[in-house]
Length: 113
Ligand code: AMP
Image (cartoon, rainbow, N blue to C red; front, side, top):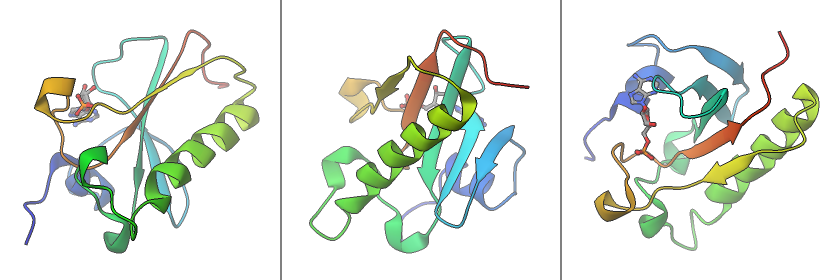
């Protein structure tokens, strides 16, 4: 079995996080070390959608990065954010520290309160 990461523990409410959005498929929470006025992380929630990294995506899990991108797009629209960056870090050499596929969402614009 794959080792559970810190994002599994956030997903399963074993450790706290500042969650800004959740539905049955996706969780969005604040990055603990923000590198922009808005810096969020998006993860897929279902065990069947678990992928450690973009480098591990297969035919069966190819929908997962798209799910995260579509959710980021929807969330940005709802928040009135029209400019943002989406980033996947891939592998240790690509700056990836947590091996639970996540999409960084960064914007100079603030979230609506
Ligand atoms: P990456 O380098 O792509 O693996 O990104 C991992 C991100 O997770 C980093 O930007 C960290 O600041 C963030 N992070 C690590 N631990 C936590 C945590 N407990 N809650 C929220 N964000 C975290």
